[in-house]
Image (cartoon, rainbow, N blue to C red; front, side, top):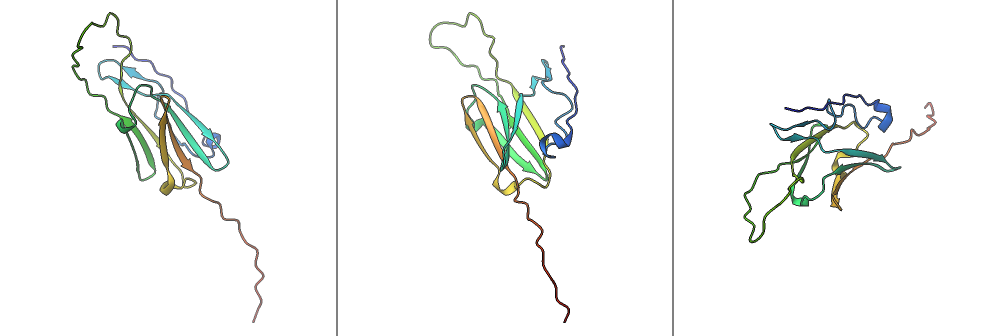
Length: 144
């Protein structure tokens, strides 16, 4: 059994409070359980946050993305299939598809009704739009 752990914490101010906790270990891999945490990059623009999840060789229909309360879950479940090759044989097979699940705690600054996702060139991009901040208005109140 081989396990690699890199524990770290993210200051919530780093991503404007987007992420309070990103799993308690990054890029953990456990051979027996076939558990893998796909690497992510998080990008902030003026209008949204983007979670870029690296997952080459998958089909976009294979991803499961859901929001439960304020937890964003991104997952893929790999099922082993015995595919018979019509001709030839594999001489070396290093590439392996693994199941994974990543979860992110979102804060109230995210517009949960407008979350979108796209998959292109092996990267899943989940867009988390920021809510528009209402500016406090000044108003003079007359006494009647």
